Length: 197
Image 1 (cartoon, rainbow, N blue to C red):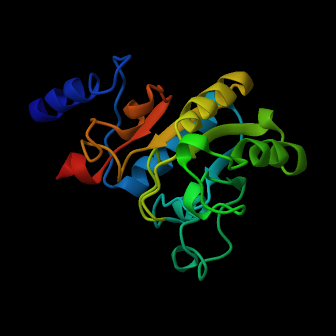
Image 2 (image 1 turned 135 degrees about the horizontal axis):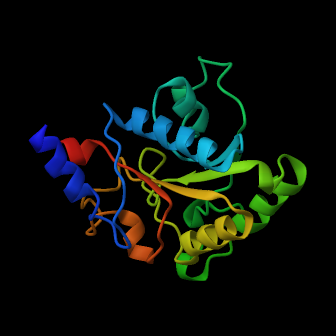
């Protein structure tokens, strides 16, 4: 219908580097599910990497991606497989003690490299999904090099970068989408809550 067509047109130009294509669904969890399915179909690969402290939803697939708190997934095992959780750079609760994010000493890159060497080949990864600013897991803003590092890693291995902007997008951080603070272009963006008002 006409209002839907106008919305598609506006959505196609919200992020820099467009025009983008849009797919409308009923909820944030459904948007994340669609993003994961799209990444798997587009790459022909099965696995997805998510991050500790993340929240992606309450459906079975999105609970498998979620690692914010055990209450979201603990009573619902077994959950869908081929999901791996990587370390998120949490500078204020780092194992070696808190430090300034400008001088981040978190070893998230080394931990991700270890995941590739111990658990899953990078060429089996369809996507890395990340909340540009972690919401449910503690409102965590990553150090400046994090998103650019993810983008470079994804480009190196043919992995798609999904930015889950359900909680951080639609102006909540001062930009339309939080990832814009780091001038990083994701392959797929999910949005919900703020978009639907």
